Amino acid sequence: MSMLKVAVPNKGILADHSTAMLAEAGYAVRKDSKTLRVLDSRNNIEFFYLRPRDIATYVGTGALDAGITGLDLLMDSRSKAVRIADLNFGQSRFTFAGVIGEFDSIEQIAGKRVATAYPNIVSDYLEQKNIMATVIALDGAVETAVSLGVADLIADVVSSGNTLRQAGLEAFGEVIVESSAFLIANSSSSDKHASLLRRLQGVIVAREYVIFDYDCPTDLIDQASAITPGIESPTISPTKDPNWLAVRALVLSQETNAKMDELYNIGARAILVSAIHAARI
Image (cartoon, rainbow, N blue to C red):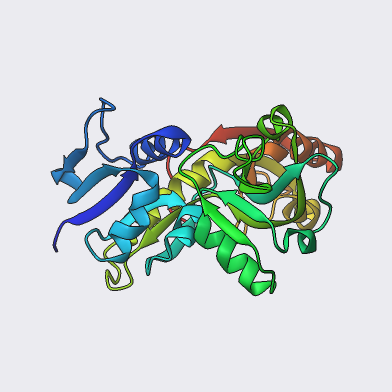
């Protein structure tokens, strides 16, 4: 089988999280931020560290088989690359923002100038809403575009909103795109990325879930199973005492203490919680 070629963000939050995730998945990753290419011959995969904005283009044209990038960047590129899986990091909201108190609906955008680093997303959205406006493409931070008179409002990625407030702006209207990091692939790469996908999904599960082991009275097993249903079903095993059963199930880590309390309250005992280092679901 030919070597899988994968694009990885070379800088920013997406780069940090992607590298950490690939390392947890057992792949060789770069040790130096200046490294642009890493060959992992043991796993028959080669990583190319590229600008996050360029990744969808490389993957969509078939130059690379798969990649990790933000959904907003994929949409703005208009690439033919396809979404494979949400990787559960890099969450952000893409929305319009204007001078505080000046805008309260998207209809007010008509006839205005909108500055953005994502011109295609904005153009497509405005066309969908039948709103005529001038889209001004800028590279990078756009918060100063209004104060400098380049635009009447902006469309940008918003996290906490602090940067907008500092520029005298506020978000308004509906969220245009809810974005996060995605594994994307070339439509013709078939199932070449299947192993990569399974490993990354395994990392997600290992991060989000813990293993519950506990003893449960036989007559309470239905109640206990309802509390810890697992992903498919809890594993239930007999014990030496016929009045007790041993149960194992996956539980969301954020629910750990609440689930332990529920189990204890119905009569379960010897409740143990273990971390997951790797998984295949």
